[in-house]
Amino acid sequence: MRQSLTHPIVRFAILAGACAGGCAATSMGLLGRGWVADYDTAEARVHESDQPLLIYFKDVAPGEKDRVRKILDNAPMRERVAGFVRCVLFRSHEPDRRYVAQFGVERAPALVVVHRDGTYHTLIGAMTGGDILDFLEQARPPGARPDCDPLIPRRAEYRWHDDLDRARRHSEDAARPMFVVYYRRFSSDWRDLHGWLEAREVHARVADMVHCRVGALKLLPGAYRSSFGALELPAVVIARPDGAFRVLERPTSSESLARFVDRSLEAAAPASAGSVPASAGSQTSP
Image (cartoon, rainbow, N blue to C red; front, top):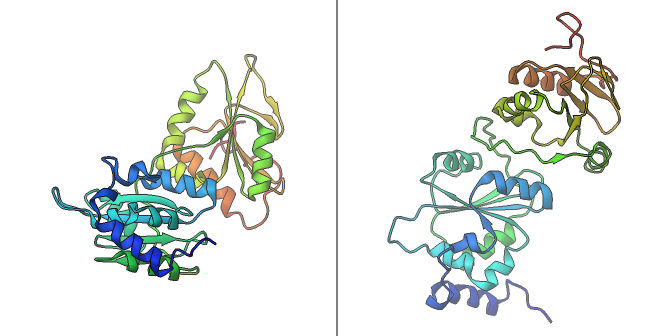
């Protein structure tokens, strides 16, 4: 019968392994054991796997031993944390300090468990293998609510679908809206859109949506006939799983995209099929 990881024998193995030279981490440390070193990648893995997040916030001076790392790299402890997305963040890196500050962490070492409901638990200060095991056992949701910082630097990363039907199924399964970008191939559309989509004010608003891009082979003037009606390209669509959608045709800047997303998401009533009202000529604009 498989022993519980909180069994005294297993706890002893974790504590002993943390001190044994033969169990020290390789030169890659935790990063060679399934840990990642940036919060953007960690959040993406949480999103894909539906697992909770475990953060190790460290501050080890050159030449000092990282005792917490040795504990976390011990084989029984690796098994205990296998059900988490695991992330190492560094006190020497200012964005990392701002990230963990959302969870009330102002010094290292610290461990943070972020549950799938968005709440968290923390363990801060010197810790042993037993402390970590007890912490992981007791850190059950719901925990405290984070003080979210919207200005934390983030990598603009989109998980593009190139097939609209597949994106729609994903949207329905995940109960999340679609963010669909239509552009003309062999034109400057994507070059302009790419720069605007990389802007923080846009990415922060649409990061959790289902992303889809459709390259239209359109050389002649006139509207492009799409699943969302006739569109003047380039165009952006936010479509909800219930079928309602809003359209922005011919965006002009990252600010216009951000304002469009805000209007679409903040509408009190369900959006009806159609475009955002035009305010300049015949083009739809912010």
